[in-house]
Length: 78
Length: 78
Length: 151
Length: 151
Image (cartoon, rainbow over all chains, first blue to last red; front, side):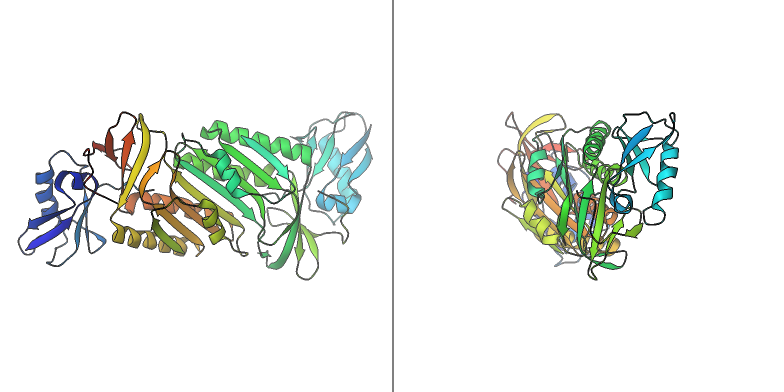
């Protein structure tokens, strides 16, 4: 399963605003974070959340092909 | 001791904006309230405080001739 | 820090601008307004009157207490006196602070202390033509038809 | 109720006017501004960027939660994106309510939830020319010299 993942803030600086990730069918949010954290090592704010289709997803949620997936680094609005 | 006492709100409606009260030397705030409550019976918001020289005074505080004395009915600012 | 009793309409935006500071990360504004209903009666307006010298002293004291307690001098409070129509502002409290939590804590402290301590009174006008003196604890007594007390 | 992400300067007075209602007795305004110092560093400006479709959805969700919890629909929130100078407002939250306590409670709920949940990020510019991504919990990492991410 090939996913386009949207990145923001320090993660976008480190890896670009969008990356392609190959994951096995049935992969979970935690698998995606592990894969991307390996690529970004050190230059990012740690412990990002993941949004699937504009909603925060639990780390054990299964990702489906076609989902809009985004890595959400620690937020700083307000 | 003859005191001019300032009145406000419902107390002013009932007794006028200022009343003259004769009290013995050494009279306390509680004595003043008792005297005025008798005159205003019923038409006022009860349990007024008393200010002496622009500060709230305890009911056992002694009033001196020459003090600026005011009856402060329940407040409603804000 | 500044406090005032005024007889003209309040300008919340001007007070907000007055407390803003480049050292502040948060500003809060509290605006009290004349509400259409109170204790089930339909209100058409409110007369606010004060024991002015004491009210000014007490307002300034409360603001000084807030400054010491919450750590900011960027505080302005204006209270309006006189006859206010529905929707008009009776009080504006503006605070700014480096951090948001004490900006909001100071706002709440100020309005609660002012409501309890400042010698200001209101006489509500109702749609049926009656008037009453009301307090901040739910008390009310009818007001004389022609008021003897002015602001 | 209305929420918006905007790229122009915010107008607190307009938002205050938008929530006012004759059924309300209290209005509150919260304004977040760019502060001169953060975590000991001298700030000259902040870039705010967002994951816009999700940020809009999350802002609207938080406002709907506040409306249900505190009992008022008179709530407007605008968050600015783009490059802000010192002292400029990044967020304005306006609430009006019949009673003052829930007007202030709703204000605090809204800013705290927004700070935790809405996908918006800031890159601070410092007086020494450096930039860093910072979060609302005190985290910071240096930002790339030429930003790859736009608002």
